[in-house]
Length: 373
Image 1 (tube, one colour):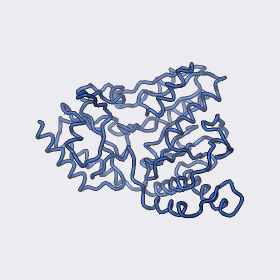
Image 2 (cartoon, one colour):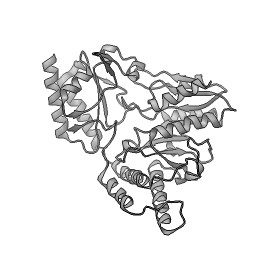
Image 3 (cartoon, helix red, strand yellow):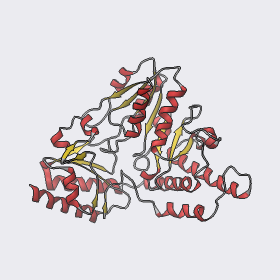
Image 4 (cartoon, one colour):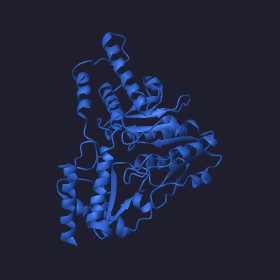
């Protein structure tokens, strides 16, 4: 299997797995217990929290552990809606957000909240000027993703945060796809909330984190005992907390390398050389994740291309039912024509991708295009 679907999920890094082992076979105490086993478990969770904070450049007490990106997103959106309902009932998001943002917003719409879905341009980028025009005296939250999971487009988060600060509005960004791929610095971005998904940066599925700026209090999504300083109930998942902490520690060093970007650039150059006017890059040509290529093979069907690739793992954002293909809502929002969007395939590279694998995929694609050309 040639794995080019790192935006869907990543394999667990061996160093991360090794860190987990100690807490699978030992150190099984409850961090809330006062005995030695509990103290050892608490120390491990505290260390993991510090490792996440180091990667994000924030305070450890501003980090809470969650079950993943979806829980983090729901915690912010619903928590702000419930806590600040006396201020207003208006939330601004974008049309190209992940369902873990869009569906909580749709849920709140059913409860009477007003949601504005900001349009994007041909590259999937939101307009900061348009965002500011949509702000009202009832706007309580803006939530715009840091990078798009399908196209890799990076949003102008710092500029958006400046607008939100000017209008005294809380700002959340879903950085699930960004953390570990590009620098994500809380102090630089200026956000109030930020979502981390562990399985996107070589930790297991089922663990995530949420940055909540110090001084901000929101209603918890999960009520119970006073875990995570009263912000998220449930006995700490020590094994996975440790895993996420180790993954964040590794990411700090991994960000110093541009190997993935160089390999992605090599892949794109090879595709352009082979297929020239038969392909189109979807997403911003420069402001993008260094590992992501969303390529439309014009006149072809993305699902059929994937089937032809056989042992290559990649993805399409389109839906395929009864022989009909409906293009991705993200590409639709970008104004990509149906005949172009139907041929879209997302290739997302990672830490373990090799040049030989990229060469093999280009060769496989050549045979598919020639056969169906």
